[in-house]
Length: 200
Ligand SMILES: CC(C)(COP(=O)(O)OP(=O)(O)OC[C@H]1O[C@@H](n2cnc3c(N)ncnc32)[C@H](O)[C@@H]1OP(=O)(O)O)[C@@H](O)C(=O)NCCC(=O)NCCS
Image 1: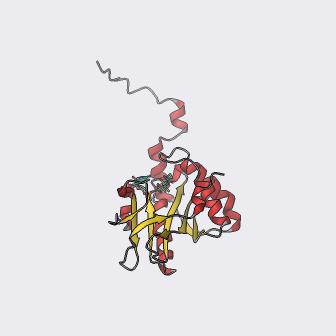
Image 2: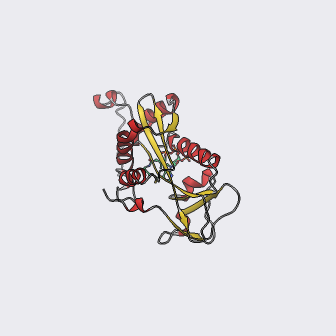
Image 3: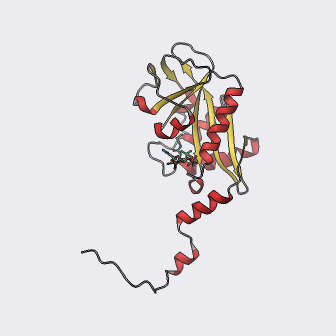
């Protein structure tokens, strides 16, 4: 039997008075969040590392090497684009874009990711702003297109779609999507930069 308390006159525990419920906290951040997206600076490097570690800490489907990947891409001069989301509280998000190879030799294709938003700012539009900014700058830079590995329902909203014949081996087809800036798509296998193998 389910017992429902009718004791509505009791005050809430003091811990609840001090800490607003999570949903209220997010609503508050949604209203006041003023975000600037810009390219990374040398002084952001450690902050970016921290944002990535924290963003992926409780994420599923990760081996927690994303911070090493970004570091290795930077070291290899393969971070074609590295942008941060900055609020009045500092760097709260990051996105990386690096070149990919396609087995048919299509030029100027890139991969989006890793992308990270500090847990307390997730689902407040920061990730969307980062992706929109990165894709816009990638297009302006003359890229042919971009691929992404991740949840199709999230990336689909930015124009990414599953493309017949364009695959990332070993991954279910629906999780690998592409966005073309000129209407043409490569065919075959896609390979990310070797920095994606970085473990430390
Ligand atoms: C994925 C991530 C970058 C998205 O950024 P965000 O700021 O939280 O997302 P936004 O606020 O722009 O978008 C929110 C929407 O995306 C959806 N969404 C957010 N993260 C999602 C995820 N991992 N999978 C599927 N959908 C997701 C939300 O349900 C929400 O949908 P709605 O608009 O219909 O309510 C962020 O959640 C994050 O850092 N996650 C941990 C790291 C990670 O998984 N990175 C992606 C792999 S590289």
